[in-house]
Image 1 (cartoon, rainbow, N blue to C red):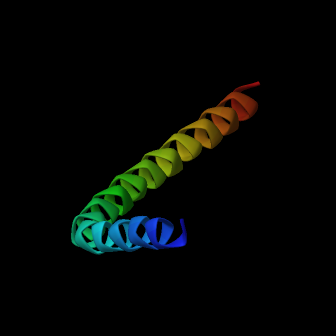
Image 2: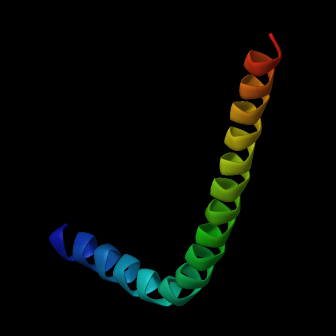
Length: 59
């Protein structure tokens, strides 16, 4: 039974090596999307702070 388990593990290991180049491309796309989300979140934060500041100065 042990040789069957090792064969399965070796096949999985070979499959993972072929997937890695595509994973790098996907990671760069994910990092770029996360960067845009961070920038958008920062602008929303500034908008909220500016709105609260204007409301407090008006009152």
